[in-house]
Structure formats: structure tokens, C-alpha cells
Length: 263
Image (tube, rainbow, N blue to C red; front, side, top):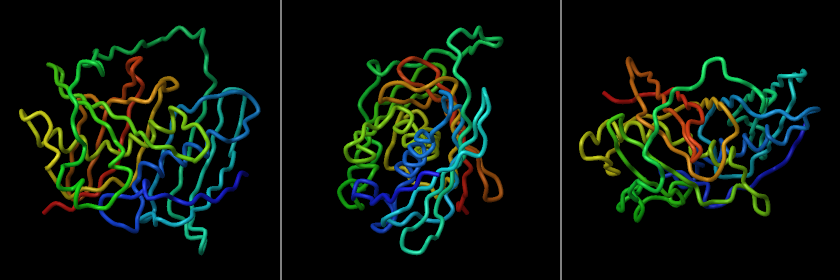
């Protein structure tokens, strides 16, 4: 079991409160935890699922990681974050690792359509100027965004310019996990923007309670995209699904459970 206490900076904050952290850095820190697990043989993360148990305070958190099982081809690793002050759990994650096989011939090759590449998209802002100026500082202010649309739907490219842990390189998987927390807000705004393209002033009362990321392969680079995402809700519960890309093409998929407070 690996333990460590991590103190958040102002850059981990959420746009809703001065006292809570954004889900993006929490996803990334849990990914760091599972990536740091001392596996006997090299494997890569094929799935990461994160559950946010309660609002995550902007105070020191203890990270604990445990290998539940490791076989020749598969491993399962858990990670948990709790408040250092009283041990209250705030977020948990489970990762499935699989052996990466470079010589594998796909039985069912992916048929993902090409999306507008990063260089062909326009600069956009995730957060409106009013919210940027008047809202709390945090993770959301360190997001760069590009937006494009083709006949198959809208695409949003994102990168996080922050550093997860001072003095350590932020891995592509950690950066991707942070970006994936944005799937619900991005999907909702894309849906409600319609022909406008991207309207960052749109607000809607929905909150994701988890993030599940499936990786077809290891992510590369620092930019990640959602293409033609979907969002639905009924009777207070919803689902966001977003095909996930990096600059090498289709990467996987992110799914979030959504608590809908809309009337």
C-alpha cells in the first residue's frame, strides 16, 4: 500500500466554491495513485472509474493505493482519498490494468470517423468572461480549449496547463483523467448551444457524481477531445457519454453518471 498526503493549491479549486476542489485534479491524483502501484509486470490502465463521495474540500488529502489482484495479463488496483484531518473518505477509484500487446491483430478494428484535428479548430473559452472575472479561481481557469464542427457533430479539444504534483511530470493519462471530468458540462453546452457552435454562458443544473474512462490504448500528448458527445436525463438521473480522442486518433470513451436538479 502506498500512502501520501497532498496539499491542494489554489489551482485545484472549483468554479462553485472557494472551499472545494474541482473534480479534474481529483481524477488526476487518483490516476497518479493507480499508475504508481508497484505491479510485478508492465501493464497499462484500460479502465479508470472514479466515484466522488462528497464535496472534496480544499485541504490536505491522504492518498492510499492497494493492489487487489495481479495476474499475468490483468491487474486491479484501488485508490482512495480521505481528509487528513479526520480520515473522512471523499473519493475512491478502481483501475483495471491489462497487458499491452504491440503485436495484437484486432478482431474488431475501430471504425471511428476522423474528427477536426486540433490545428483546424478555433480557439474558444470554457468559462465565460464574467465567470472568469467574478468567480472563484481554480482548475477551470487553466483549461485551454479549441472548438470545431463537421457533419458528424461538434468537437471540443482541451488541455490543462497545470502541474499535478510539484516537481513531478504529469503523465498523459493523468492529464487526460483531469480533462474527462469536464465531459458533462461540455456535452450539455454543446447540446444547448445548437447552431451557435459554443456558448460558454449557458448554465444548467447538473452535477456528475462519477467518471468512468475506457482506454483502447495508452494516451499520448497533452490535448484531448470529446466528439459529438451525448447527454440525457430522466427523473433526476442522467448519463453523459463522450467518444474520447487524442492527437493520434480515437482513444476510448468517457461516461459519467449525472444528478439532475432541473425542474
